[in-house]
Image (cartoon, rainbow, N blue to C red; front, side, top):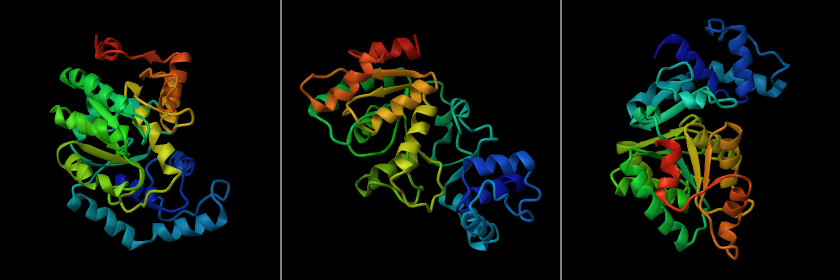
Length: 287
């Protein structure tokens, strides 16, 4: 790890430092040469946050944590690195740093498809995934999802069972897999697939991080496929991010009597492409 990367990652670990603060610090000091000597402009930080951030910048514990990541097989990818996903760079406020464990080559694949949906799902949603995903995987599409219960888990398993490739984007850090029922799946993916997070590995997941990670799920993907979602589902946040970034949005139609399809049916009304067959997705991403 070169000196600039080490300083950027250290800054990224500091409590009270948000995306905009990193931006303004880099703008005033592009190489971060004076990082350990400057105080923070109070315009961008609350006074209490500034004190915490300065303390963290002088923390040997954080530096030791960063040194230990490589021993745990964790790769650090900054926005300035070649390994950083090009599509993600095009999004609004892309993560400065990504922490990854697994096959980071998946981030540079051409055809990534986000597959997301409700934690609560029906047999119809599960059967639809098992029908649609194998053909996509056969064509080399990498499945991206959020390692959550329900549709996300089914999508990851489907990719693995069909000898495909999959990326999990998680809230919290790599040392705190949520939900814990997916720890074995995560371990398998960290070995043979890929899991990434924009949060330092020791970060415990918090509620606000889940909608934030959705922008990465859609941000690294050419398109987003919503399988099942209620009207106010978090999956619709992912779809909205995809729309904002000009990416393809696909939706599985469902019964007008099913709450689990109300969100996807609304997306179709708003212009998302209705998916009946794998070809409905393939013709937009590959053909």
